[in-house]
Length: 110
Image 1 (cartoon, rainbow, N blue to C red):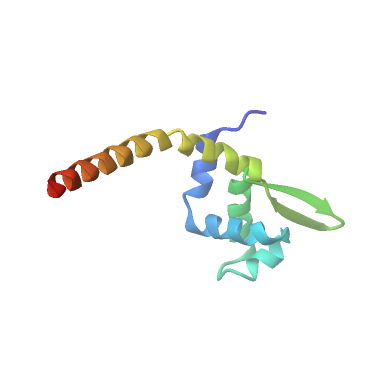
Image 2: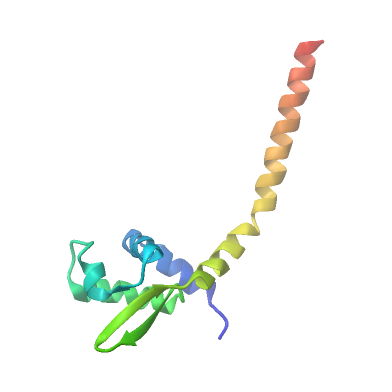
């Protein structure tokens, strides 16, 4: 199924969800392990995890009775690809700024 980047941006919009992703970047974790890092209920963490899963930024698999949450790098790649599209605009502007500075410095040297 093709990823909806809108769902990924929605998931990334919340600072708590971004922090959850940071924790999952170091290791896979259960809901209980993640809850230990936040001042909120297990149910609140679960809601955040559902949104991250809908955004395809994490996946969840069962290990016995536990549900293990895992960061999904390919979900982040689609967001990165979307943002990278705009790099060319920054590159062009920074190149224009460099040229303007070089031109100004050339005037000072004369």
